[in-house]
Length: 415
Ligand SMILES: *[C@@H]1O[C@H](CO)[C@@H](O)[C@H](O)[C@H]1NC(C)=O
Ligand SMILES: *[C@@H]1O[C@H](CO)[C@@H](O)[C@H](O)[C@H]1NC(C)=O
Ligand SMILES: *[C@@H]1O[C@H](CO)[C@@H](O)[C@H](O)[C@H]1NC(C)=O
Ligand SMILES: *[C@@H]1O[C@H](CO)[C@@H](O)[C@H](O)[C@H]1NC(C)=O
Ligand SMILES: *[C@@H]1O[C@H](CO)[C@@H](O)[C@H](O)[C@H]1NC(C)=O
Ligand SMILES: *[C@@H]1O[C@H](CO)[C@@H](O)[C@H](O)[C@H]1NC(C)=O
Ligand SMILES: *[C@@H]1O[C@H](CO)[C@@H](O)[C@H](O)[C@H]1NC(C)=O
Ligand SMILES: *[C@@H]1O[C@H](CO)[C@@H](O)[C@H](O)[C@H]1NC(C)=O
Image 1: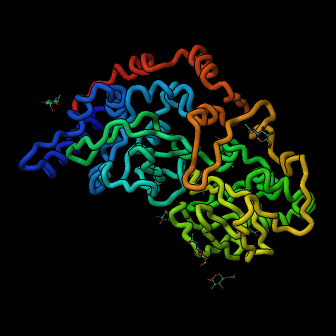
Image 2 (image 1 turned 45 degrees about the vertical axis):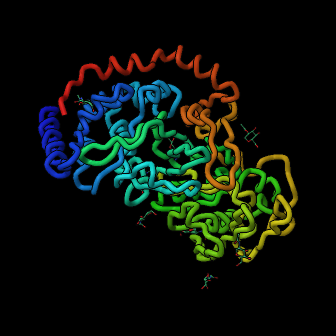
């Protein structure tokens, strides 16, 4: 089996060599490139261990490999990938590696400041993603020419060395692993979007929201539900389900698609409208707080109010900071609506997770979200002192770059 992979990969790499070797400047094959970058030795070891990833490359017109440097692998124990790497879960690791390969050759200079692009990857298995055509990575260039790749749960990887050409495309070195987007409920938990999640459980909508391929979800922050109080908690589950059906679009719309004046048909058949005012973006009258949180089956945008299917023409007043609720007889409550509907195995009131800072332009996430991601289901870890927590975790697991290198040391493959 292993032998088969090897010969196939040898043939694969041979194809690159035959196909695109330039006359003027010889371009190296991927194996030599990786072997030559000391900061990529861990990644090289992984590629040697799971060479089947490379078999997919020739079917694309060039690829961009986002290669995590050795430091990136040091952070794995604090990420949601910890268990998979510790247990050598070949299935998960293979899909993680596929997520690190972008379709098409992207050189750093092609990025335009400020405007995010969403690039499909080789991650297509429906076991891990339900975005047809390949789960995406968000790529955005920030002030100071910092190039960032945003992945699941808002994890951010920064480009540290760019444009290393090889015969099949280009390698970009990043400082953290990309996290394949997790499912809707794990993502809502990580972002502390509690009432919306509770309402999904209360209406039995949770599986259709999390398993339908290619969706956009406009989830109200908890404050939007608190502002409604009895106006939403006293609804019948049928009425509530209608409200929820107005928060989901049967297509994937990342923030660049939310252009001024655009209308989208929600799952209930009613339109939602996008309005821009200054730097603010509104969905009907609700302000967009955090955009482009990637989920396994599409994208999640956080807004400050619950959308009302009975009031699809609601317009914001951009002069005021926080828009009034669009439901009749709304009255603010302190108790978060619908939390009791969330099964305890999904969200137990043990401790807290990090709350990303709202942003109008792009998803903004702290590095501590990696820690939050590591604690997806029943047990949660407070991220308020992430440094100390991380150190503690490291002690417990005893799993660092050195251990990983030993684990990978056995695999020898010349490509
Ligand atoms: C590493 O790069 C140098 C210079 O680019 C090249 O001469 C050498 O052959 C490379 N080594 C390997 C193992 O590819
Ligand atoms: C994708 O959808 C299928 C059913 O439509 C479901 O079984 C699978 O779990 C979903 N994958 C993810 C990652 O949510
Ligand atoms: C799913 O969404 C992606 C990205 O927007 C798109 O390329 C693809 O065609 C969509 N697939 C379907 C079946 O709608
Ligand atoms: C999301 O994934 C977690 C495992 O990470 C699982 O426990 C949970 O049931 C999933 N949620 C849904 C709605 O399928
Ligand atoms: C919500 O949408 C789903 C899928 O289209 C549909 O099956 C369900 O009946 C809708 N619920 C309500 C209350 O309209
Ligand atoms: C949604 O908007 C489109 C375009 O403005 C319009 O043609 C359509 O009638 C609207 N649908 C509903 C249900 O209002
Ligand atoms: C968005 O469109 C509306 C209506 O056409 C217009 O009044 C408003 O100025 C536009 N906003 C921006 C930021 O261009
Ligand atoms: C999450 O939301 C709940 C309810 O609003 C709040 O009590 C808690 O402090 C939040 N957690 C964080 C980390 O902000």
